[in-house]
Length: 612
Image 1: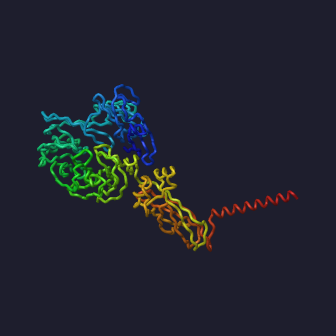
Image 2: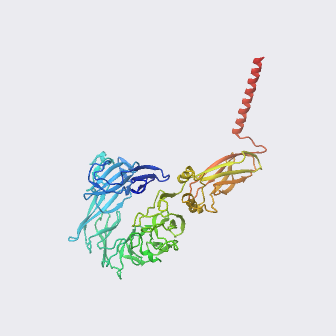
Image 3: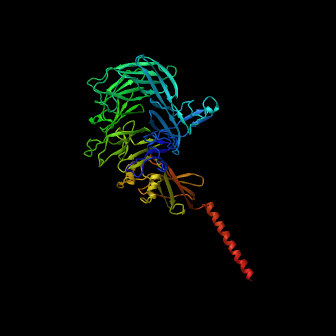
């Protein structure tokens, strides 16, 4: 997880030298902020900071986080960060909350019900809980809220000013009745199985099914025909009312459909056909089919969309559907029309793998880019060579950059170990057992000149360097592996990072960054010296022939790139000529020197007079 600019992860317990526990690192520097050995191991069911019970339960450490924005007449803003660890004992689910900044226990919530989970815009974690009696065709829909009022999370219950202050610290709060609202259901949701929620657009619509469709990786002998899909309102004024019910015919030839993602922008929800890789789009507002079935996959291994087995996996962003799989293809579909926007398949592995292509999976979609990685369900050792992480343009499928690395997945289901937040992509690399942080880093510029004073019309050389001073580069210098790490151009970043951190060969023809040199006279008039490119050692130099006398400030400016933040430095040149005056600083030094000489002479004369 990433939260508050920190990275959180479970340490392995067993044959590693870490010995388990839970760790928090600074996202930008990799510095350990805190580590706890007693989080993420078998702990007591009554845990409130220390083990207080012999009734134990197995836990795997915090698995989700929360930044809750609390607003009341007495308090405003995000109330810190909480890491949540969920555990079950005696059939009761308990959430244990730990402070994200220190790792210390803060409070517990007990009696957490199951349900369809959603994060609200304010950071509340809510669960839609559906109850339905098929015999009477009646039921209810409730919204459980982990920040619900009047449960004991505040300084006091009731309606005094104390009830407007968020004060859960040190408490164990029963949240079994923490429902923000309850709405009745009086409509026909019957089918071949109990109704279940599939999608929620909060405050708008709840879509569900009463048919037993396949799950991801699961194959059914026969799909229910028809498939019952329904929608009820989540708008406060009509909540619980039936909006539509559709009996969708099952596909022919024993084709197995299962649920795909929903897109709020185009208001389309989807089904995927496991055996044919096809997608079908349905209207959120009516339940009627809008487009499909469509397919653009060209590799039969696309059948395996993840480590779970048969069935495509898709992700929604920018009004598009992005799919992945063992076929080595990422395909982008327009969610409004089902049309194929682009197909990325630059994953040929030759004879390196049994797949022919490197299977490719999506780790994150952000900033108009798709971040993907190669992997498979259970890698053989030695690991296949040539695995990469990818950055792909989300709008046209252009490959922007790649870098060596088996970014991996968390077990068979295909969930990536790579995550992205705060402009930093984090991934665990199977090849070298290290965590990598990829993002825009700081730079440092230095500039000087060969001579401080020249005559007008003479040449002076302006020289300097631009260095990579990110945490990773600084660590390489401190370890003695490099004396310094130069800032390099975007075009060679991938190969250069592999050289620095992955023991690859130094890339030939690597180029540095662009540096703009400008001289400013005492009236702040600018004179362009030119733009130069630093070398693979980070150095740059350029001659300058000033035509007019004066005292000049020379600024070397690296304006930044996609890889580095900008930096600049300055030096000074005194240009002598007819009518030129010495700079104030040097004139003052000269006057001081003359005064000192006069004082020394007077002292000597005084001594001679005394001797006489």
